[in-house]
Length: 322
Ligand SMILES: O=C(O)[C@H](O)[C@@H](O)[C@H](O)[C@H](O)COP(=O)(O)O
Image (cartoon, rainbow, N blue to C red; front, side, top):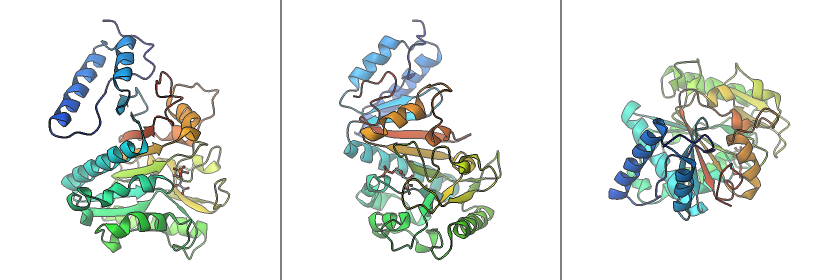
């Protein structure tokens, strides 16, 4: 079989979501087989379409040729189940490898999609004492304010699992945005020194075990908004903005070099309002199209996984999700 270059999504992994036991083995076997078939040029468009139609009503896992892995789910419940399962898997690997799981959260709907972490089996099986929590971005408001990303995570997750309070690193809410960003970077520098957070082999940046990002309809991730000068920040690890188009205006945010130095990055986008941004962030859209912040997420050595529901994935090239 000849390789068909029209296979726009370079589909080569389909798995049935859920299950366990033999289903897990089947998933791995299928992934390996399709991966080998693609590697030797045996992946045809017709086969990809067959897989897509087989996957209707099931989760579809796609290995994109340069945008990481795309996981398209039928609905939010399935997405959330797969998301927490993947986070638990990364936590286990990281704790096994280095005894710590340093994870950076964002705000928005992502947090409610993570709430299953507080339920069985994860509340018992995850090694919560090894978790260190950070924020990839935070709104500069009091920690008790309804807009606080810290409060959102605390109320929905952190209070419900046995995380060590001293492992939770949130910003100092009594400072200005600029001061809070500087101080947060200082805190992270100390934790890199003691290797609570690893260091990247290719830059001097911190290497978080996992950075979790939501994506706005404009393609922003963390508090990195389209066309904002902080997208060019190369030196700072944490920076600030006072003109966020999404309220509240004052925020601190990890910079792109930090996001792109992580071992793992997850981007979650759901709902039809995100469909165009998903297309622009993932597909080969050419240089004339707007360069969205989400498209600039490209971990140099790490793994990037996108979690979509079928509405958010509906404008992906070659998709059958609409
Ligand atoms: O503090 C923030 O505002 C967030 O970190 C932001 O980057 C969020 O993740 C996206 O705007 C997506 O939010 P939704 O998932 O709620 O659309």
